[in-house]
Structure formats: C-alpha cells, structure tokens
Length: 588
Ligand code: DQQ
Image (cartoon, rainbow, N blue to C red):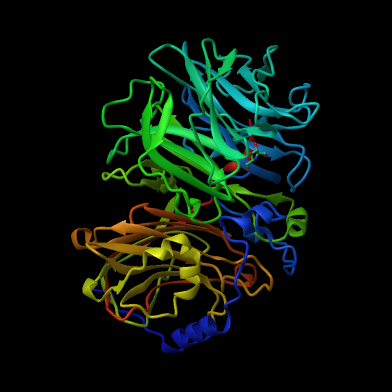
C-alpha cells in the first residue's frame, strides 16, 4: 500500500533558506597536489571549533577502544575460529603518539573483546614506533605479523613477531624474532623515513613468499617488492611491484586478487583462478585509492588496466573520511573484508577532554564489479544482528520539493535502506567529464538546494527540529553519451551549528546502467557522530564524522527527499534502529 507522503512546506522553506545562507567551504578536503602536500595537519581537524565535549558523540557500534587514540587497522586476520583486529593505539592519551599495537578479538566482527597490546616499543628496531603492518598465515597454519618499527636512528625498518602459544585461542602474546629488523632501508634512492607498512605476504608457484612495502624511491611513490624462502630472510626484487611519479609516497599498500562479479573473496596465496584481477590499494593525500590490473607472477609486476597520470582520477575506496585501510581473506565465509580508519574532525583539544579519538569503519565485504572497472563494498552481514525496531514504506512518490519524515526509529543509531527510481531519466542533465577531477567541488556547487533534471534526491539525517542542522546524503543523475553518471554527495556543510568545524561536502561519481537497473540504492549507517553511506550497491562509499549540537541537546530527525525537477519513486524504504554493540567493553 502506498504510504502517505508527509509534505511540510515550512520545513522545506527553512531548509532551502538555510542552504542558501550557509555555504562555508573547507580547504582541507581530500585533494591532490599542492594543498595536500603543504598541509600542516596531516589529518583534517578543526583547531578553532567551539568546544562541546560529550560522550553522546561516541559511536555505539563502530570499532573503538574504551579510551585513547586509535588510527590504522593492523594485521586483521581470521584464525582458528577467531577474528583478530589490531590497531595503532596510544595507551597514554587521545592524541597520536607512543604507538603500540592494540589487540581485540571477536567471533562476529561486531562485538569485540579487548586484550593487552600485542606489540610494544621494546627493542632497538622498534623503540621509536611500532607502526602499521599485516598478518600472514604461513604454511603449516602458523600466523606471523610483519610491521614497521622506527629504530634507534628513527629509520623505518620491517620486523616480525610470532604468537607465543598457538593453543591460546586469542593469541594474546606475540614474540619478536631475534632476526629483527628483517628488512632495513638500504639501496640507492630509498628514503629511510618513508619506508613502511608491509602488506600481507603471498606465496608464488616458485614457493617463494612476497611482500610489498610502501616507500618513497627517488622522490616517487612505490610499492617495493621483497622475496623470501622462509619469511624471515628477505631480498629486494630489482623492480617495484608498481611505482608512480604521480605521487611521492604510498602508505599502507594493500594487494589482493578479485574475481569480476563474484563477491566470494580470494586468498592471494592460493591458486588464483583464470579471469581474476589484482588490486593495488595505496593511502595518500588522506585518501585510500586503488588501481585494478593484472599481476604477472613470473615477472612479478603489476600492470594497471588504465594508467592515469593525474592522481585525482584514481579510484577511491571511500570518498569521505577513511584512511589506511587493510583487507584480509576471511576463510570462514570465503570473502574479502576491508577495514579503514576514520579520524575525529572536531578539535584535538576536545579529543583530549573526551579522552578518546578515532574509530574504524564497519568492516566491509569487498569485491569486483562484473565489468572489472571498480570495486564494490557492502557492510558485513553480521552488522544486521544489531537491527531492532523496523519501519518500512513501499510505493512512495517523491515529487519535486518533497520531504518525507522517517519516524519511529532511533535516528541517532539507525540503518536506512532506500531504493530511488527516477521516473524520467531522459530529463537528466548532461555530464561534463571535467567534474571527475573534483567531485567535492561539484557537490558544493550543486548542493541539495539546486534543482537538477533528475535529483538531487536522498536522505537528510541528524537534522535538528528547525533544520538549522542537517547532513544530506544525495544523488544526482547525469547523462553521459550512452550511459548515466551518478554523483553521490555527503554534504556536511550544515551538519552542525558549531562554527569553524571541518564540514566538507564529500562526493564521488559512478557510472551506472540506469536504463537497465532502474533503481539507485542508498544504504546509510548512522551511528551518532558517524554517517557511513553506500550508494549504487556499494559503488561509491562515503564515511563521515559530524558533530551536531542537536545530537547533544535534544533529538534529531531523518527524511527522504527529492529536490529534482522530475518525480522519483521509492519502491522500498526500510529503516531500523540499531542496538549498541559490545565493542571492547570487556577485557579478555
Ligand atoms: N600510520 C602509521 C604508519 C602509517 C600511517 C603510524 C598511516 O605506519 O604510514 O601510526 O596512517
């Protein structure tokens, strides 16, 4: 039965007026080139924002420790029935520093038990830092972790640890090898301060192990390749796995195989089926980017299908606040899962006062689209165990200017899934390929108040009663030769009344066969200060942090809307309240 559309003209007017009045732009967005490299703050925050210190901003089902700072996910793995998540952790405070490897375990990727740190700064090869690394399950079913240490001279070196007791189900204790450091930053042109974050190892048909390490080589970015017979003695291959002069350093490289159109994952150390592609992911400019290509095991080279000299055009794992991601093959369910880190964007002084900073995005299943052109991501199915009260609406029509309030669920902790079916795709505006260089600019200029032929339509979340605060996640459809290009924006510019907050308008484009597919799906996970959205079945993902005053002071509201000229049908809208997960509350 068609739901009754709740149109509230006063709300819409307030909404549009506010859009017109407030358009403070941010210059800290994930960008390429000069701004990014000259940035003083590595991670965008808001040094001058007015302070609100509240635990109501603390997420209820995203991964974080009970207190203190976290950044990169490290060495995720599934071993003997247990998922392990390690993470860059400051045990002494909520700013980056004193980094050790925090360690948590889980049976479902959602509820976590906190353990003692697994790797601490205790030896000359890591006395100045235990930084990012990866786990590998070696032959004989024995896990090992290779991580970056900052040594006594602050050079970056690669070290290894092994579990002390394989019969401990939680692998609580990890022992450093006497062979550390395994790899030192030697060789012409290698910057010893830019040599870190080894990947998971993979074994070739020649029986040799390989790992890649992020580096700056002769001023260029590279994933350096190393080979070993025993995982302890490593030799650098004379060419990198891949390098590019379009950037200067890649942090946290990740390398994995995927099959077009199949969401079952592949173990890079197992025989890779015909037709598989390889993905090289790298972290730079506060963004996680990737290339899809072919890996030739004989020559040990990775060749991207498309080489783009302008790194603004490189594909992104996520178009929002998401960095240093790492994937692993989950042998339990035969899938590949990727985790990323999301920083706070309020001020670091508020982080000190709150006593915590940083979360991990919801683990996502990641696979390759059937046309091999891009990766798709979707929250792991286990997150659905947190769903409780559900509302659903079918067969709605959103005419131009419609706002439909989604009621009766917890708007601060929710999972919303909406299918949007534009009624007149011929009225889509034409696409200009130059927009691909800066989708954020396009989201700022074509915000939710600007009518298009088809769109904007989407969700308004964490809105205050009078709409002075709101976060908009929306789509806009453009016609591009034979296909459609969809712009997805997560516009935070009106997300909070707190002045000077970092509130960008994130955005990304995806190509879509709208004639065939008919519907564009949006899934948004709202978790207090986290708004994590998946557009077009996971073609564009945008993670965002928001700090509305209304979240602390009162309630918030949620709406579906259409502000495009043509009507959009909503065949299906489902929303659930989300329960709090048991994230690291219990110590093991
Ligand atoms: N974080 C780690 C480094 C890595 C960076 C240090 C990426 O190993 O390059 O905490 O966020």
